[in-house]
Image 1: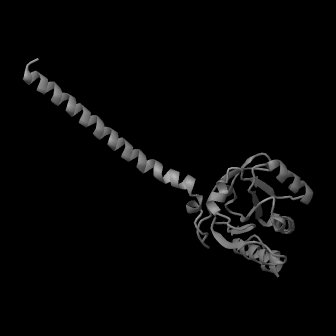
Image 2: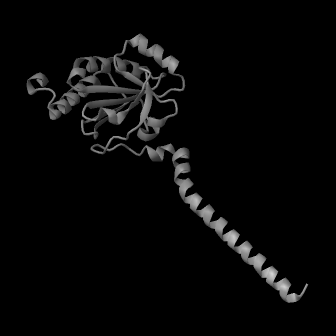
Image 3: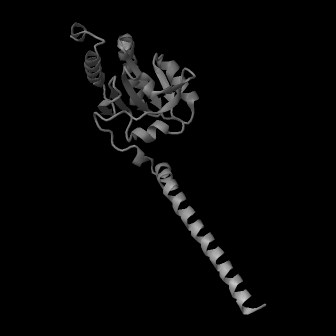
Length: 203
């Protein structure tokens, strides 16, 4: 083969290889820019659930409920929502659930909603608790920790009061007997802001 022909083929091969390596490098770089945030969110869920701040918009999610249908938090825009996180092993949580049910029964006709998120991998055990406590409000099953990653309940129960505009107004960590009176006052204040109850009822 003439030297000039060999050189031409060598140069052509080198150029093709260079172009392929450059394209591959660019592809890896672009893919990395897309995948890294997703991997960080998956591997480090706490980063998603940064500390809750009052007056910030509530973080939306959808979960299957004890009624059998999927429930999305934003569906309740216009209502006062108490979003509650708990686990089966938390004895204080069960007492709080009972008190929240009393509050819900008293004010559900005023535009008050309780969405209680059970962080569990076995909804069957949660159904037993619901039946035992005879709860009227919906329980949402967070099997894959979808809502938990957003709200990061480092301690349970965690209760978040959301106003009709979809903003977080109050955050309560843990529960002790008597806290339901605080919840009631805050719920009534938010209902009064929305105009669904009168000042006479609050008193």
